[in-house]
Structure formats: structure tokens, C-alpha cells
Length: 338
Ligand code: AHG
Ligand code: MN
Ligand code: MN
Image 1 (cartoon, rainbow, N blue to C red):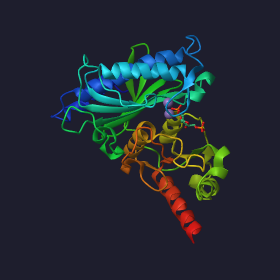
Image 2 (cartoon, rainbow, N blue to C red):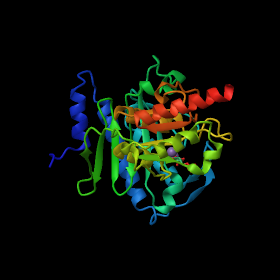
Image 3 (cartoon, rainbow, N blue to C red):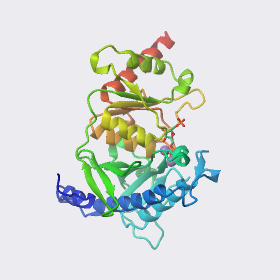
Image 4 (cartoon, protein in one colour):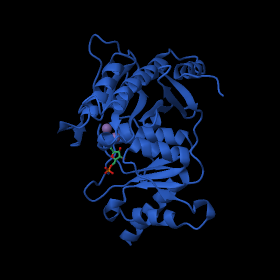
């Protein structure tokens, strides 16, 4: 059995590889782990704490907000803004950028997060998650500018997610591979359980909400039909899985090998999922694990965002399948123009 490695010990070891590090990143990740423990505690008792159900209003996205969305957002904001490590945060549940109050110390990082992903699954006790991406503040003054907030995913210095499922697991990368930590309530610690996660070579699973295939762009439905019917033995047992919680679907596909697809439709020409705090952080993680992520035309990490809550079409998972999806989209777009 591996010696017990807490996330803090792992972070300190990673920090030693960066002599210039001041310890802010370690401190920030420690606070994110704290927030994950607090949110996980509420999620695990959701049915008992009257936090189930709708909060009775919609967010900036127009999504019906669940009480746990608000609780998770409050916890993430409170922990991060008081951590002394952030200059600003962007949250799915906040219309604008949020900066620490005058009393709270600031730090060098910008954090984008989806405090609770998979909200529609909360009342059914299905796995949900938290997603976060970490950038360095780059503008020279203390002001927070678009240059700081709207950075491309290529500029991420770290990203990760928490899955609140059979166990609470925190998976993150700071550019040196992807590592998974499982929460052990006995110690109150996240312990290293999945060192250097790599997405398997073979795509065994495809994840898509097929109730919408008739609304997808040309090539998307043909792509799914193709990967369902490949005759090579390695693809023969492909299956479909759709939890409806992006974090849980992507986490499973990284571990087992799979591709997740949420294309644009006529009604949602830029898709449903948000670039800053869903797609870019997950794209960073999956690329670190040997996979890829694309809109079908552009690699997610290359996109320079225009707005905070911008949506993008999303295909993420095995590198070959993402490239194949891009080729289907390109081929059918050409046919349309012919
Ligand atoms: P969120 O709960 O943060 O709004 O995210 C929900 C997203 C994502 O988790 C999931 O993959 C997708 O919505 C499911 O969309 P459909 O309900 O359209 O299938
Ligand atoms: Mn989400
Ligand atoms: Mn959310």
C-alpha cells in the first residue's frame, strides 16, 4: 500500500519543484480542498438539511438555481476571497467578477469556478461536482482588467474538479500530470488515491444527450453513428453513459476512456456549457491526462474568451475521437457549402 499522502503533502512536494514559489498556490489549493470538504458535507446531508430543491429564482444564465448552488457558491466565495491568494473570482452564480473586500488581503491568482455542476441531479441524489480553473493575474496595476479575467485556457496554471459521489474526490493538475485525492472522513483529509491519471487509449464510452440529435450541427449525429458501429475489435463493446452532470461524465470518461459531446443546436448556437468555468478547466485536465477538447472547430484551450458567461460547443475525451469529431464537422460543413 502506498504511504499515506495527503493533498497538502503532495502540494508541498510539487512546490519544491518551483524554487520561485512563494507558497501561494499551495495555500490556494488548500483552501479549495477546504471548500470541497464543506460543500461535500452539505451535499452528503442534502436530504436532511432542507437544502434540496429550488431556490425560487434563476441565475444570470436563466438556469433555475438550486439551494445547494447558492450554498456551494457562498462557501467557495467566502473561502477564496479570504484566503489572501486571489485577486478576483468568476463564478457561474455571480453576474460580475467578484474581488476581495478592502479588509481581505489579495493574492496573485484569478479563480474561475462552477460551484455546483449537475444541479438538476441534486434532488435525485446523483453525483454532482465543483469545477475550478486558476490563472495568474497579469495586468500590471492592482486593477482587475479583462486581460486578467478573459485569459485563454492555455494560460491556466492549474485546474481541477471535485466529484461528490460514492466518495468525495478532488482531481487536479498544476501542469505536472493529473492526480486524484479521495476524502477520508476518518482523518478529515484528501488522500492521494489516483496518481498520474492518464485517459486510456481506447474510447469505450460515448456520452451525449441523444434527445437532441435532430438539432445538432451536420456531422455530429454521423460522428456518433460512426463510433457506435466501428468493427475493429477494440471498439466492439462501446457503450453510452449520460449522467447529466458534466463533472461525473468527464471524470468517468477520463478513467475508463470515452468521449463526451454537447454540441450547439439551432436554439443554442453556442451550445450550453460555459467556457470559463466548465469547458476550459476540464479541457486543461483532460489534455494533461493525454486527451483533447474542442468546440468541433477550435481547441478549447486556444479560445480567448469575449465574456464571463460565454458558452461553447463541447467535445472532450480521447484525443483520436475529438480529432475525428472535428473531421466530421469540417467534412459536413464543406458538403453544405458545395
Ligand atoms: P450546471 O448544473 O452547473 O448548470 O451544469 C449542468 C450541465 C452539465 O453538468 C451537464 O452535462 C449538462 O448541464 C446537462 O445538460 P442537459 O440537461 O441539457 O442534458
Ligand atoms: Mn455546470
Ligand atoms: Mn453550476
